[in-house]
Image (cartoon, rainbow, N blue to C red):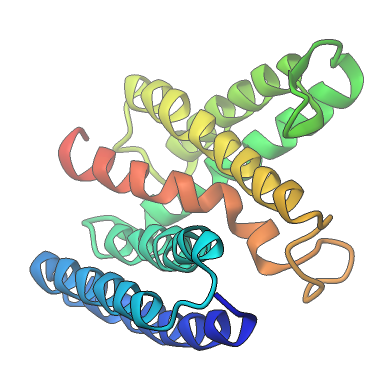
Length: 219
């Protein structure tokens, strides 16, 4: 598929992705499924009848559709979290779990990191840093319980840290995988010194759906 084809398909999916949050707001699972299905089929047909490079068509299709699933679908769960009872508290808990985990991983990894966690994807991350991130997430959950979210039990804090903490770290690793695959250091330059928006949201993309389903069905 030639580059103009990717641009057209990307523009269509960007529009579809921008509309997905509306379906999350309406809490309509049927409409959401229909929208994702229609967008996927539409792009599939676009690539089918616009093909001019057979070998490139499958990777281009996968890359284009992943843009719809990776950011809008995963990040849209933040809307569902906000609509839960105590939704504001859950949002702040999510941010604390992710940020305290990032902080713990950075400081423990920088000072004690000796064993590489996943050098193929992120050479600087260590097993010690990952453990520090998990401890940071647990500490953040306990702080949330002691301050603004007393409904959480110690068991809730432990489970949330064990589920959300590692997923946040894996979200960071997955974005590193994407960046290395494309040979770029950052996802963008919109935030000076920090990269693009995806560099700030990568952990939340993986953590938000898990927190929603935990809060909805396990809490």
